[in-house]
Image 1 (cartoon, rainbow, N blue to C red):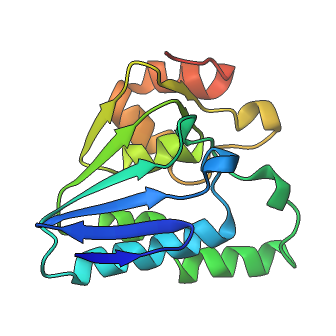
Image 2 (tube, rainbow, N blue to C red; image 1 turned 90 degrees about the vertical axis):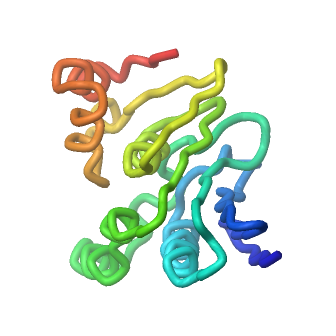
Length: 171
């Protein structure tokens, strides 16, 4: 069994790799460190010859991922540098390059980036207590990780627009 811990825990046992978002006190809010760690864990998954399938899940009882960690907004040295780093570590492109099936195991809050991560997985399994929401427009932003496209492909354009433009919670 392989186990690596950071803000994302990677474990592989009997061909099943598990990547666990590991910031339960922040409902696994997606921050820069988690982005970088998840990027590395996906590289590991792609290179792990023992992993045949992967599950991505969130730690703690409150939710899979509560979206972006807003406490980090405005902390990048500049928009140009932030954009450059995103291109160098293209997490969303890395998700699309995974050569193995990935299952999102969803529970509790699945918000913003949480939806975008789940949408990039091959299969999504949602617990009865899931609450889905795309709050970016209410915060004066747009979904930045391809959520406008991936969500529309999954639920249809009308439903995606309804979620994105109204900040409605879907349960």
